[in-house]
Length: 460
Ligand SMILES: Cc1ncc(COP(=O)(O)O)c(C=O)c1O
Image: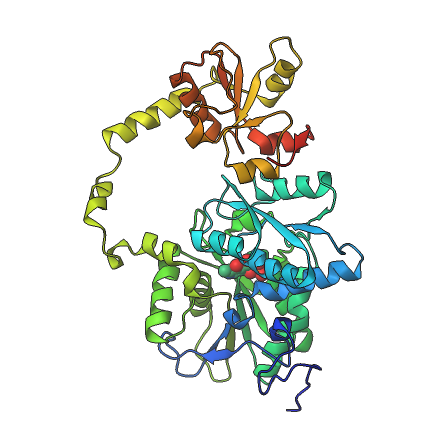
């Protein structure tokens, strides 16, 4: 087949003008690797498309590059602009690197439940990470969470733009332009089945559209985890209903895979195929093995979004026996200690309605003669990213120290504030223990405050 070369990049010698030359395309596709040992077929050929061969390590590099290209072409981005994007990790990683090459900064609000590996690397790449108490996947429309905070930032803070991978057609378009044509060309048009795990659904929607445009008989299947899953990057049916790019009417079907099956298959892929796939790759493969029959001519392509290196902590959770435990930690296996149970009880009591106040109560209190001091107990970098106007920052771990911004008079009314109203309850308990008599914790936190359009400030 004739090779098209991009000027400045030599894909044959793998010499590139810049890192962006490595972005995948029909001329520079990510590898398709045939699987042998984990598939039970005699005739059906199963290929994994290894997306960690993208320059920043995941399928999302394609999307990040296309979102930025599209926004620049529409005049929405330019010098000095800041990006804000809620992400479960991979889009943020790709976007951070694309942004570095283009001179934009990136702020990414995300759930604290995202694997620590991704949160750490985002910081290394230069992202401003705002960690939130949220579900594993940021859910559009959720009352508290990364998407709400990112939208509020883009609407209220000058210079910020949200590309919004959950709604932006440039997301599936990235796959229509690249993933689809690559699969078509790499299989010589012989692909019969395409499987992808579903997160934003950019991959399945965009690649599916392209493949069906070439051959309407290609079967396109979406794979989703069960409700309450622990697989980063993909969504259960309930979570998918909130994603605008989810178009089940365009797919041939959907199949559910449980955590246990996916994690066991991840181990098999690594050990038996030497393919260092992560959990969402294994999920997609499990889905394919449930639906595809063994028949001559079947050529199955499965997207493997990223590799195992990001999921050490997930594997430790799912295979505790694989990891030797420090003997000093062995007590943790016995369940919560008496002290921990006592603390949990105390926190339960503290969260009752006599100790917490609603945002409307706080705005009323601020307008009254006995104006409370607002004490934001979050980490300084999170406080600096956005906080309730007039709040002072005393992080939880510093509440008991001398010389903080806490009032001397123990009778001063205080309202504690955090992201959503959980850490602030701990703050309330600590302040009570320090002798403050009139402390309340604000339900809804800074995220709720932002959602109501109430005034916020940035900086330390
Ligand atoms: C690890 C991983 N797997 C699967 C997906 C799903 O891809 P898509 O968002 O295109 O549906 C993602 C997307 O973030 C991901 O990060």
